[in-house]
Image 1: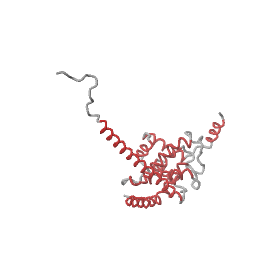
Image 2: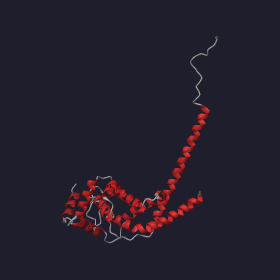
Image 3: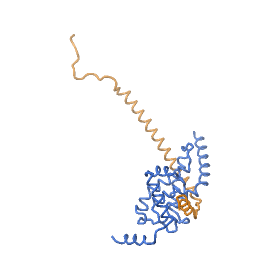
Image 4: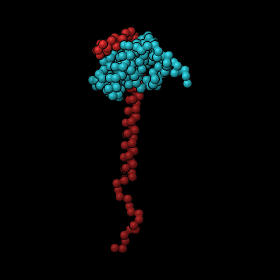
Length: 82
Length: 170
């Protein structure tokens, strides 16, 4: 018995007695799939919201703290009498 | 925005219903072969199929021309191979849920069933099956040959007695 014959015989054994699909399977799949979809949507929206809040917080902090301005010297005494 | 969402939901529901009507029978048969349950009493195969169809439904809008059947089958196969170790036990016959003798693939291990169903029943190419399961190509080839041989020429009845003796002795 060569390979194609063996494979055809195995296929034939596997194709016997097909199962019938229960009617409630479709509804259950849609229910679960819809729930996954909704959760994913909420998660994406939450992530955008978080990103937006972080950006706003950073901008507010940068405007009030001005980290790019050189801080006034605190160690050397001011130059006087020249 | 909201109206577009409603229209998209309706379109997805319509397309998905047509897809399930066409594909569910074949996928359920494949799942029943994987779990080695009898065709009229297959709760685990139904659960497996429900989960894979739900996954397909959830990513329906992002398929972009990809075949939903391929997607559902790939999810079914990877989920089964991940669950097989826990549910069926690594040693097959000693696991918690033994294969039902009415199933044609009852003598095979879960991995042999998976590869045989993918390769021969579903007609997936060897390279694709290997990539899907993360196995070397030669291993898929060997397992498929061995599973075909076991299926066509079942071993003598001695094996269950040995396994029972092993299970009884500590």
